[in-house]
Amino acid sequence: NPQSWEARADEYSLYGFTDLPSVHERGAVVLTHGEGPYVFDVNGKRYLDANSGLWNMVAGFDHKGLADAAKAQYDRFPGYHAFFGRMSDQTVMLSEKLVDVSPFDHGRVFYTNSGSEANDTMVKMLWFLHASEGNPKRRKILTRWNAYHGVTVVSASMTGKPYNEVFGLPMEGFLHLTCPHYWRFGEPGETEEQFVARLARELEETIEREGADTIAGFFAEPVMGAGGVIPPAKGYFQAIQPILKKHGIPLISDEVICGFGRTGNTWGCQTYGFTPDAIISSKNLTAGLFPMGAVILGPDLADRMQAAAEKIEEFPHGFTASGHPVGCAIALKAIDVVMNEGLADNVKRLAPRLEAGLRAIMERSEHIGELRGIGFMWALEAVKDKATKTPFDGSLSVSERIANTCTDLGLICRPLGQSIVLCPPFILTEAQMDEMFEKLEQALNKVFAEVA
Ligand code: PLP
Image 1 (spheres, protein in one colour):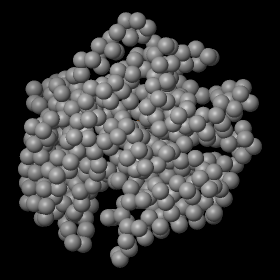
Image 2 (cartoon, rainbow, N blue to C red; image 1 turned 120 degrees about the horizontal axis):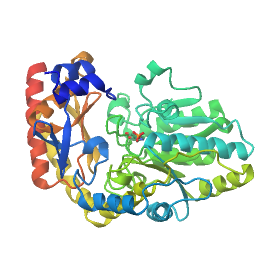
Image 3 (cartoon, helix red, strand yellow; image 1 turned 30 degrees about the vertical axis):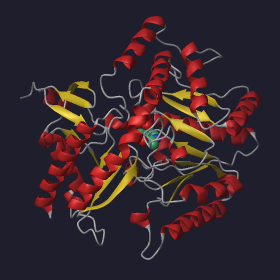
Image 4 (cartoon, rainbow, N blue to C red; image 1 turned 90 degrees about the horizontal axis):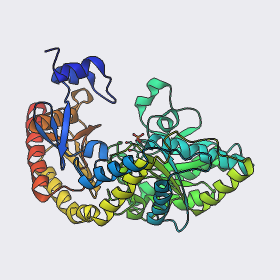
């Protein structure tokens, strides 16, 4: 039916990151509204969104307090910028709040419209301040394979995924180190400690080979998100941070997914026991209600950035909607809702139950090789053979088939590589978690029976 919502979606729009043949075969899902962690399509079908949209709708899809905060600010002062020494009162309050809840005792905040732009902005800040300090050659950026930092030309260059080769990226000067995923990349016979020592050596050797005076910064997600929910090997950040410090290389924590409660603490860097030089925030920052990102500089970078801006007169960068008052009002409310209305507590309280339920599913399945995650972000990795960790033949795309079957059953989860990812909204109840377990296991059993 060419008039159907699904056909119209297909006819006029382009999707991001979408397996198009699969959508042509199955039809698009067109959504109209949400309730708690559920979304509803144009046919009235209900789906439990175990993805929180794209990790961001942490307070669910109908939080009244957040919508009210947005409406009140639209009525009061619906838009402004943060250029030329002017900004809204909401922007001032949010910057104070972000520094207050950050691990830093002093800092400064710069706003963007997205996580990608926040990473881009951070790179430009590093280039700007190194140049102002007489080190214009300090331009290389270090990240890791499987990292996801966004899609702009710079943040896609930081992302460690082969799919960016179609764009001729990464640009020169963006270097990717080994992904700290011990289960997959540990060598036979290598202990986790030895694996971490090897990665630390690789970092040291890379810095020596390239020259510390050519490296602008090192970016890392505390837990890699879109790379497939990959928590760092034990002791990883403790091993690499002293090396970065020794060479004067800033460590930037990309907390676009991990920030504001996803790992069980306010920041992922707190969960993994390291203090970065700056934090990149987005997504949860506004509980998904407004496109907004933030660079939160810790004391050292904040002071150096201020000095650089004074020396060069201005930092020639910023977006029309940087520090948008409605976005800031929503973020202030979202931080309050997550931290003070029990959402972060719910993650802490229910994370062990979530892990136990998924572990039980893994143990009952012959084809789940690894369960990994923390807090409310988890992945189950599908393997043909558990003992040898052999993946299914790539062309089978088992994870995609599992996710499609889940969608049929009214559960949205995400296939990433060979993994199925679950990152539910923070409001999830025990009963909703059980619904998620049941539908997921039903889908796994069905697909594994077909492909095994
Ligand atoms: N950094 C991380 C860790 C992310 O997960 C994402 C998006 O998923 C980004 C950056 C990019 O954010 P955005 O999609 O808002 O540009």
